Length: 354
Image: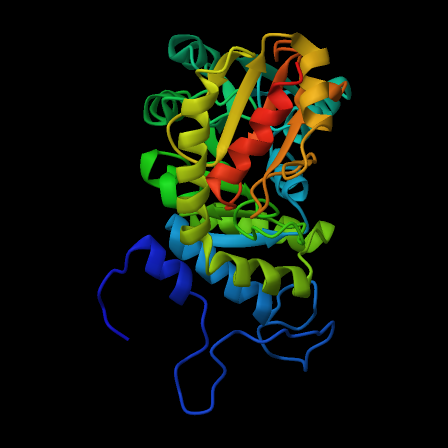
């Protein structure tokens, strides 16, 4: 193999492969094992698996660190938050993945930590909130408000305050943003979304360049058993092979749809950061209009997840746990890889019903 540093697109295709030798498989096989012969590196099925390792190698190469896979995105979040000391402060976006916000609220209600929820676009306020914090949790873009954080500035301030920095990179993916190069200590993913990309996997992952932190988190995964499934890891790695193609296409579609939505009279606001496949729109008619649109499409699927090859949409405030600062009429669009004209025709038809 060449010593050349490959592009992210090539890395997505090549990393985590078995050694190239005669009769070797091109893909890492599915290793279904709970027990291994003793005195080796694995010992037991909760400590490691060759199929997990292949996925971890590939995602680690894309993000620029060492990866650990988990049973779900929330299992990843929980394992990281479990390291926060009793009563310590965690800074986090007021708009973020709902599961993260709910976990923080649960831990705060039980006296485990103090959650400081901030407007991530107000960098000065975020920097001020870092004082005496143990952990600063960032999303950029945020879910579903699509706000952008100044990661480098916030990470520097957090480190000055003695805090670790975590960035949820689920929306941007390592093809659009590599937070470890911007000062983050940890990157987390819901690999259920773009990384696997086919709406058939529940999986989480984290990546770090800090070997000591990696060892601590690996020990926590071993202890609590938040391990990924073998088949899920294999499917996620297969999905990762086409990540660059899927992200490019969904981003191209999203850019065009955001442009057209901005001219539609039923749309009061379009939120799109200029990259990625997620577009949020606030409908002028509020919640009723948003609910009507989500019930009236035939190609777009009304569903809560995102990042797959298929286009989905939902009104986020239909969930009681969604922050009240998210507009009632906000619809989050996860733009897939279908033909953009078909996507627009279906969406425009639904908007005309308002």
